[in-house]
Image (cartoon, rainbow, N blue to C red; front, side, top):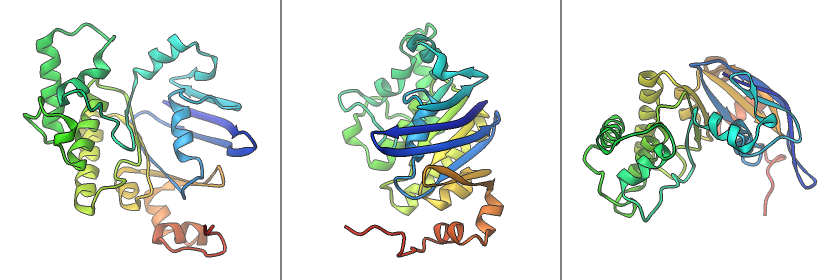
Length: 249
């Protein structure tokens, strides 16, 4: 489904991605982990063509994103749903209007079918009947659920998650994990989640990619990652700092 081939990305003099390569077969669930600043979110943006690599290729369904016009990229992006780190709901729109937003410009939908689609995804994220509420009337966890509903309303083949549990308390984060697992199972989508939360990585990632210094340091099953004796991997999994690597302000 997705092939990343030796991509390199610099912002000015800063090398963010340094020869990153991996494949994601259709239907697989992959977690991308690593410390802040190693390039995880930048990598995620490459997968939908929001950022183009300086070198290398990203292919989706065999199509090279770097060779596409903006119109062609829009066609490929319709295969994706994305849950942004902050939810990115539009404050001036109701829940229903936010969820319906990705359906604009796609296949024709009458009002009744759109409303049914909205009701279906709200039921899936366990928030039925809140179509007319505004985002400001919802808790942080509820906003994340609405954002997830928006990400899947157009029935994408691939769903990307950027730090889906950031800023949530452990109980709410657990509920978001369970909902993402439900989406993966019921909709049979390909899932890629960028996260610092190792519980989320273990639950969502049948396979885990660990990034370090802009490269893929480890690519293995979740079971092997959590059993690893590699000191770099072990410290990250256990949340133990190596003070020689920590930059203090």
